[in-house]
Image (cartoon, rainbow, N blue to C red):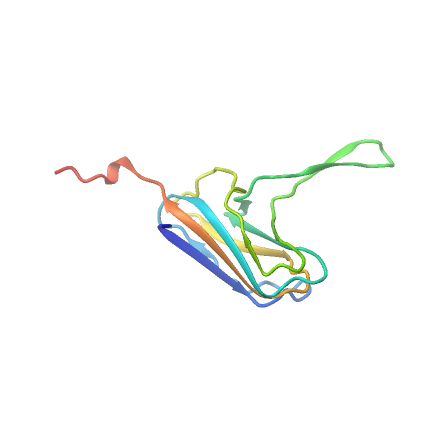
Length: 140
């Protein structure tokens, strides 16, 4: 069982408006161990895309791709750190997309909803395990 579970609830994305989702302060060091995404109404236009940021940096593996610029002939790397809830799906459980960088005590975690795909009533849950600290071991 996870030591801590963070939950973000999000109704839908409206244009470029500021997203009204909470930020969480990390009082200890943690490592992400699981992720669940649920939608009351499945995305119907495209996949929904989410990113969780640790002080502004994604906690997910960058699965970026190189895109060829037809004008210059140069390949440009495009970062891709989001996780998706597929079009037509109401649930996704994704536990192996993390970048293996521990979340440090004192940092803030936030959720970005990059695309909602016309889905509604999303819940994103992040499971965290506390990183053990040898100085906290009781010596009796």
